[in-house]
Image 1 (cartoon, protein in one colour):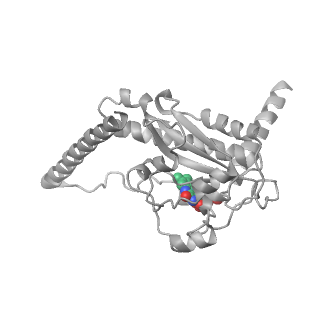
Image 2: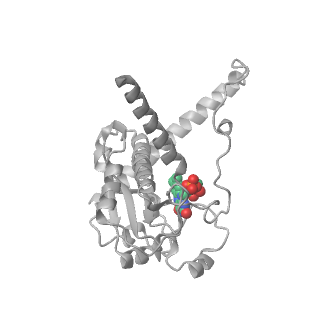
Length: 276
Ligand SMILES: Cc1cc2nc3c(=O)[nH]c(=O)nc-3n(C[C@H](O)[C@H](O)[C@H](O)COP(=O)(O)O)c2cc1C
């Protein structure tokens, strides 16, 4: 009897977890209604409980839930890594505060690189990748909990290079956040926008759009097969590169290795300049 109860409990949990994961949708249209602080702190707590490479626990969070401040940040002309189907200036006419500006709260996620830089043993690019992954794990945890709480949510592209290549507004992200105590060692990993959604789905989850906000492509997922990598039909049939082919591959690898080392040295240099 005890085992049956346990099994049912586990089955229920699995069903609930699947339902939450499969129901999460990016939501970009929010009601003008504040989110209680307790809920926002619980979202950050979900972010803190994400896994982290090398147990660095280096994810850091900046919560902004003041409407005026959100609109100020939204009105900055952020640049995005993809082409928009309409120009940035046209988008500004439709949404003067951008997509961040309509939210009731924003959470920006950073990596504290002081926790990874000292242990990088000459391979900072690996740690940098872990910093990004740690941030992403936190973001996904927060999005899932927000969905269950009925809070609309959307991941917003924000990344460290926004501090090197200026934003369309001519500012860097550090200019935008000058009033916050963000140490130079913190690198931006991403952002989420939150707000009560204009619509809920039939099960009470925030109803997302059917198409990506600006690209207008369907967000429907394909059949599982589309995503799963298959085994090779003839595993032994890789391209035989022959003598010169191998030499070329080795030369490319050496060159890439050398370039990565140069990038690392430059990165350390910039880091030192920033810390001075
Ligand atoms: C790394 C990352 C960056 C994203 N950046 C943006 C963004 O800047 N603006 C936006 O509207 N959506 C952004 N999204 C949300 C995606 O557009 C969305 O997840 C995708 O279209 C699939 O839709 P769904 O989340 O409803 O399943 C981002 C998602 C990820 C994972």
